[in-house]
Image (cartoon, rainbow, N blue to C red; front, side, top):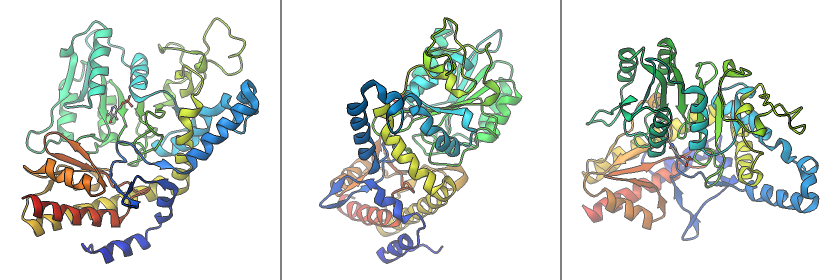
Length: 425
Ligand SMILES: *Cc1c(COP(=O)(O)O)cnc(C)c1O
């Protein structure tokens, strides 16, 4: 497609977008009576319109049935977590037995590490990316302390100081260098700051080759890029529901546990009654019998109201399909790159992107750097109806989400960038 930086082009591209109808299924924050340009779906996805209806239905059923709603309601609460399984399996490339929706992301990372970070002998180290998301750093360091180990056992792969990216060769090299000391490799699939997408398959393969466990934090990857966790032989993964998956603020997370780890009584696990064999759960025997699927890692019965928005959103993921979403995402981010180059040409300001330009190395997010006046530009955009995300010292994160963003959003963003730079510079 030959891109043009004109409104006419953007409207035409939107007209021929096979996913254009999905935008209408979401509630947008308003700016002067129209939808704002919402580019923060990587931080908090928008509300699917059906979410409110589904929440009301649960209020109705709770009112009507009381405790009987566990089995009598239209979506029986007893099985509520199961309503997410098929969709999540498709989104992360898993078997249905390998995924479950539960808890928050950091909680799930801890639960996964309780099972899969088992330091022993010389093999005690954890590999993660330098400048990992703070919650992941806290989780990893506290896991080390929990096992009586200090932070020197965390191998952080630092990004290149100029590009701020981490080369895949560097990751593979670190794994080779410390081959017999690494117990766990746990990286973010898509880096939250730079938008860099790692080659999960190659890194997982190397991790398995050296005899380590490999887990992925997919906070910025689930619902954003194509994942094949089962085929890639990933041991475990966890992700947030409220970013690309639109589960609402603090909404429910998901986990993947490879089937090779199911039904193994020797795997230690922090256990709760919702992980116990469904046939005898209510007999409440003393001994825990794990469900022979990822559901064994569940602790509590499902928080129905916290899960409702995710149900509404995953229906739309089922309809759209990850392949089509990813194809549109590639077109939108390529257009955003193009528009940024137009902004640079029109203003002479060396606006650049931290995010790799190769589509296999990124998802929907572009981290834009505007030297010196970044904060002012960000404030100008905010005042003019663009919701983006500011990261110190000079990065504006822009995520055109294929489910509900369009080419016109990107065109409007480009126009406002030019206006702001002409005023500010
Ligand atoms: C968003 C995000 C989190 C947030 O953790 P919660 O437990 O959901 O609050 C953690 N890690 C990464 C990499 C994230 O992007």
